[in-house]
Amino acid sequence: MEGNDRSAAAQRHGAAGVPDEHLELELACTCGLPGCEERFLVPSAAYRWTGGRRVVAPGHILPGALLVEHHATYDVVQLPG
Image 1 (cartoon, rainbow, N blue to C red):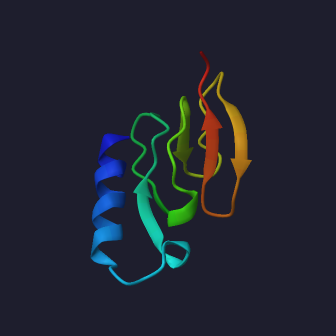
Image 2 (cartoon, one colour):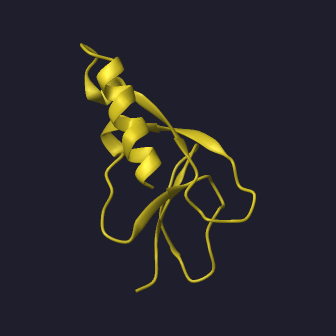
Image 3 (tube, one colour):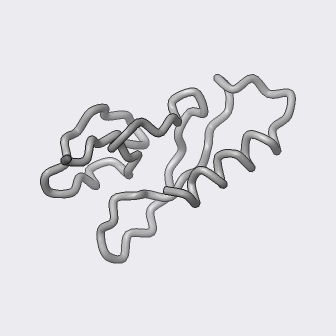
């Protein structure tokens, strides 16, 4: 998760002058599944960490997690607890 935060910040900084709503960020899946190395695009405006939520590759939902949003290139899941 921390790596994606740094990546998002760097991508936003590198796109100076481009409105946020037009930026797409390339993120790494944060599902935690062994061997997962998937990367996907997320609109910059949609990338906001909210307590207990993770952005994952489509279908990479861990047991016990709840699908909150489904998009063509990514899903948002709520972790238990």
